[in-house]
Length: 355
Ligand SMILES: Nc1ncnc2c1ncn2[C@@H]1O[C@H](COP(=O)(O)OP(=O)(O)OP(=O)(O)O)[C@@H](O)[C@H]1O
Ligand SMILES: [Mg+2]
Picture 1 (cartoon, rainbow, N blue to C red):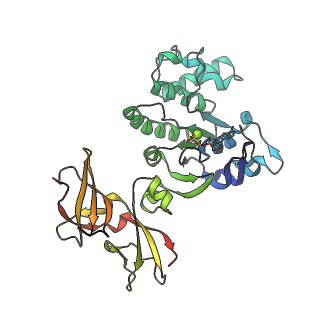
Picture 2: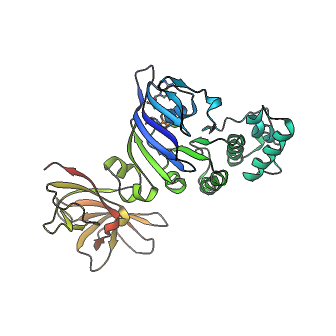
Picture 3: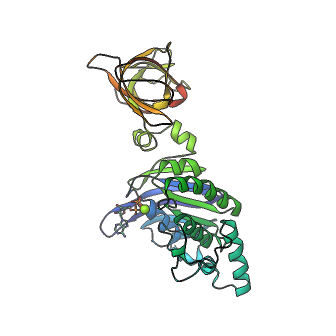
């Protein structure tokens, strides 16, 4: 069953800024759902509408089948069964870890409160830290306290706004895995906000890519990466080469300026006109028998990989400059002539261009 339902939700601020524009989506029970998009696209506003910190101008929001906002209903934040982890964690500086975590249980008897807080402190791996104050904790530890505090009242839905933004790169990677494990173990439905594609790809069951308050694409991480719906998604999630071409007579290739590009599956049968393709940088493979020839313009050695700019076809003014990702072992230099083939699973037709 859908745990969260947004139907045609609209929100504009007094400035006239439309933050959320006719947004409709559902999140299933127990799912980890991520809102991903550039700064200002309406991610935090969507979370705040869900938590009840903002009222929609139109549309309807339901949680667990009950209307929270819209159609004449309004349920205040504290009655929604929603826990929120704010971007800056917002821990109470004058309360120790145990009392921060127990805060959401103010109405329970003290013995229940202490026991439950201990359970969630243990769940986030902070047993032994109960008496510490927020300023005596690292960023990652503070994040875990905020998470335990939000989970302790056992909400139906947990909302996390940029939960990794204050963490350094190593801690960020560790916390991605931990957060996923903790959310799963509580069975809560989670909606997470990030502008970092790696966080989104690593942690989510499904991702919604947003731009200017509306949905560009929804899907699981693999389909979002492998089959971006349009140029915005292709460029925002990872890097991509955008190339225009036409369907071959046998419908198995797109004929482009860089040669024939295999498409998989050949789903464009019967369509005419020009198409735009997204080819991921790792969708090219350097191979002596490859049908595409190019000349390396630039090599950027990054350790785990190297990013090359390659002009195809070589030595003409009309060449297309491709971004190609190559493994770290190959000895490549600007000026080298290389041959490549294309891996069809990393090619996506992103739209049909009018002829
Ligand atoms: N309280 C407010 N008053 C007026 N405009 C606002 C308010 N809050 C947000 N906005 C505007 O609404 C739009 C969406 O803002 P929102 O905070 O939802 O973006 P976001 O996707 O979370 O961005 P970021 O990644 O920078 O946090 C922005 O253009 C922002 O300027
Ligand atoms: Mg935000």
